Amino acid sequence: DVKVTQSSRYLVKRTGEKVFLECVQDMDHENMFWYRQDPGLGLRLIYFSYDVKMKEKGDIPEGYSVSREKKERFSLILESASTNQTSMYLCASILRGSYNSPLHFGNGTRLTVT
Amino acid sequence: AQSVAQPEDQVNVAEGNPLTVKCTYSVSGNPYLFWYVQYPNRGLQFLLKYITGDNLVKGSYGFEAEFNKSQTSFHLKKPSALVSDSALYFCAVRDVNRAGGFKTIFGAGTRLFVKA
Image 1 (cartoon, one colour):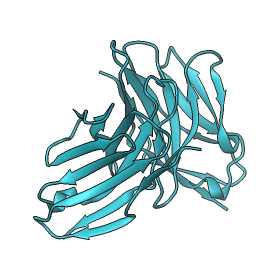
Image 2 (image 1 turned 180 degrees about the horizontal axis):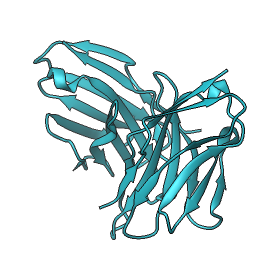
Image 3 (image 1 turned 180 degrees about the vertical axis):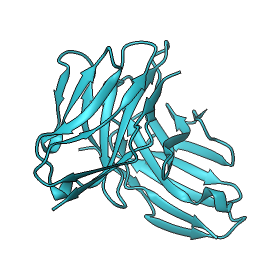
Image 4 (image 1 turned 90 degrees about the vertical axis):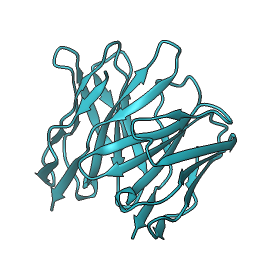
């Protein structure tokens, strides 16, 4: 069974800090995604990657960057955290070309920026 | 552009009664539709999908969904609700581009409350 692991369940950071959110999957999936989840807005795509060192902007990339140095790991970076980045962050992965298969999600990281 | 609408923020139902969570979609090609469920402080779990074939799709935990092409709807249903079904439900559509790449677009979510 696919496992997607997000390193932290809860994080509290201060405004202006650099924040790293880590995601690791164990099924050799090429495609990985970062979403943020906010009440009433559903899931919004921040960035995605379809291979090592490849990245694509999603719908709300401003204030974020990503890193994909190894196939199994996809990191989301908040260069200078702001209070409006307080949210639930979800990582997901899927095999390339599996457009009729569901995404596999981690349990999420709830980030609070004070 | 592809989009998904879940018109109800919240659905309340009594245990043992049938439930319906509504979803409508807009796609430019063949729809790939999904339902996910989220329990508190957890990620999303896959419930069921429609790719092609029968309009009534059966999934996990006794849930099913009815695909209606003319109404562009994909409503989630269950004949008899359980208190443990209380959760946040997301409808999603897959946006496949010509190169074979894809993104998944989610609705805003519907919170289901099942009262004992």
